[in-house]
Image 1 (cartoon, rainbow, N blue to C red):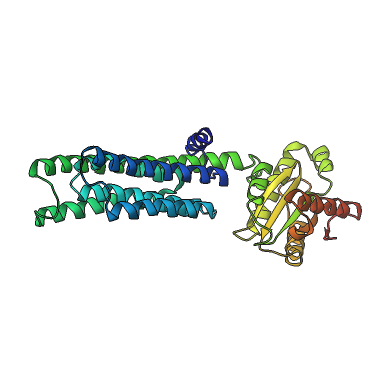
Image 2: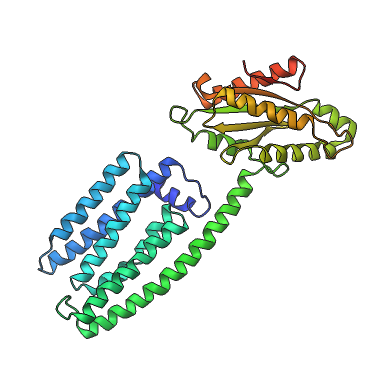
Length: 343
């Protein structure tokens, strides 16, 4: 499990899309780290002969327990947020008790938050300690009895606080640049170099994340009619221009949540989330007419496309649904091309 978690952690440097298993393992790693920090502080108090269990400690322990239950319920991001919040509370709690060295543990917060959250949420968790520590120091300045700081330890604490401020700013800049890099890398990995639509792998990756029971979807398979003839008559460069332009046509005439990819060769796959087969059929027919009436940028000018449509409720698995739409596409080819087949 530890090896898998570390592998998932290494993938956060190159991927913006982590699997559900990776999110769960990283959340578990965050909870474990935070819990160990709290155990360390409690253990130090115990060996120093002080009182080591306060109501605050119990609340923090319960927070980590709650994070585990939330994780068990299948909500790793919320679980991670609770765990990071508990870790921040741990450090602030021990700072309030006068344990100035807790300030040196605050850099853990950006490290933990950077594992699973995007830039905006990362900023929230990273800069929250700055606000909280400023509040604690303010109480110290205006109420000497509030906290067990001497002026000497206060100066030391201020230095540590200033170091965290610089560290968090650098970490935020690094996180911003890293997220930009990952997005660009993800785009390169997901996009077909010629048409600009999704690759086959990216298509299935997104498709598998849709739960048909919660959100039914439809699949449209599209194939250019007589594409071999276009290549043979006008050359492969003309065929490439047709593929590229057709990819643009599909992207321009779909909704924001729909996605289209190159399934292979001259075949495209379009996925319509939250769409039944009847509506998907109307979309396919609309696309067919747009392509039929369009003048393409190659000597032959005219192109037609055949379509096959299937609803996710018609198959038990993603593979079944795609194969069913593909079968209907080839049925459209056999029946004369340039048409939409749904059964």
